[in-house]
Image (tube, rainbow over all chains, first blue to last red; front, side):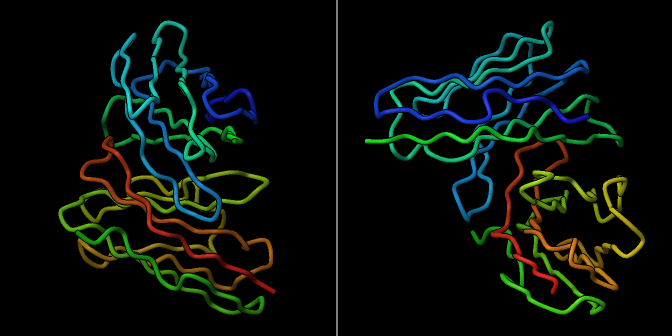
Length: 113
Length: 113
């Protein structure tokens, strides 16, 4: 089942912060985050595997709350290069033959100078 | 190292024609995923393979779609006969294992007239 992302879109000025949320109705085993720039392929940012785990990529970090079945992506001091559509992908079954990564609808981030 | 290579990059054809999309995995990767992306439906997983074996094809829309992996480094997605509603960007992605970061190809932009 597809996770729900919010907000659908956000506009920022350079240097501002933003939070993107990803929620699932199923218990989560892992959460993947990807960024896709217009006309390009999605690019992997990070995987979160444990409840409460936080990871970072540049000034982009994420948290994973197993109990709440959700993950949040934090864009700190945003740069123009952060513009793009961010997708979360959630995995509900522990690595097994029925593994399937389900992607959310995406959050479009526009960073303006 | 070369990334995931897809061909063709663009395909325009008339409805009813057979379409074959091709994908070369990153060397050493064991898992292969085919996605379709449209504005309406977002990024949808069509099918994935692990060690050349199709694991889950529940996302394949109809019998008109078929995918093969004749060897460890190459896969094809075929649509026969094609219909205008098949127009989309088709991505393939590979990963070292099924639950590891996925590396996407540049996609094939398919237009069925």
